[in-house]
Length: 181
Image 1: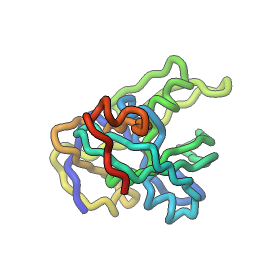
Image 2 (image 1 turned 90 degrees about the vertical axis):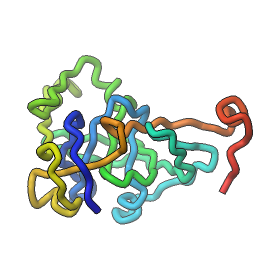
Image 3 (image 1 turned 135 degrees about the horizontal axis):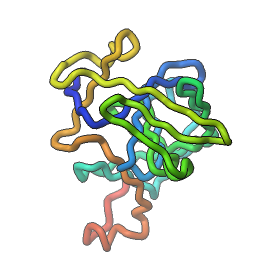
Image 4 (image 1 turned 90 degrees about the horizontal axis):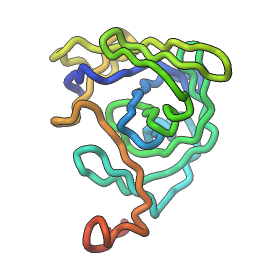
């Protein structure tokens, strides 16, 4: 699979259970997400949430949502233990959204130089990201063999994810209930 670079995204190399993962820091996502295929590959149990839906920035609804509890994510010298919703992400392995960012209080990001600075548990962290050159196309398998990672999401600058419990909002949002799979 190949993707096209989006220059405004902040991606970091991380680890879950000593396995490489690509982490997207996304202030446009409401929650933390773990790719469902990656969760299965890492043998992390995901509780099914049949009434939860995820709506991505392009309006597409993802109906197969699960939740993992206490996932340990390591990014450079920073360790995070957090619950994650599982959905098919198809471009990154982990998304850290507002669910995590709001716990940081004041933080600084620099998308030009590719880093995020914050204080956690009294300790200062500066996590360095990576970015592919604009318009370069590579395969997703090259992420850990080089400093390249590329993704495409149509006309969206980054893949914002929004989590909704639609069991209460289906009529209001869509005018009719969303069919259950």
